[in-house]
Image (cartoon, rainbow, N blue to C red; front, side, top):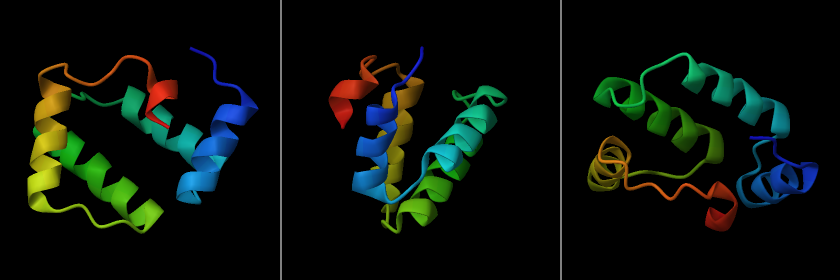
Length: 80
């Protein structure tokens, strides 16, 4: 799936995270098992630090449950 520069610009505007950082994180994600709870917690914590937004334990648990149970929307563009 190819993303346009406008997609990355919207992400950066909302999160202050640049395109290169997003691409580096995506590469890391491709190399790991996203059904693994430990990997997911690490990714969530990394994103939390990158964006400067706190994620509570409860929120983290809900995110992990959604990912593990395939309840994440497939159209990422609609999330932003």
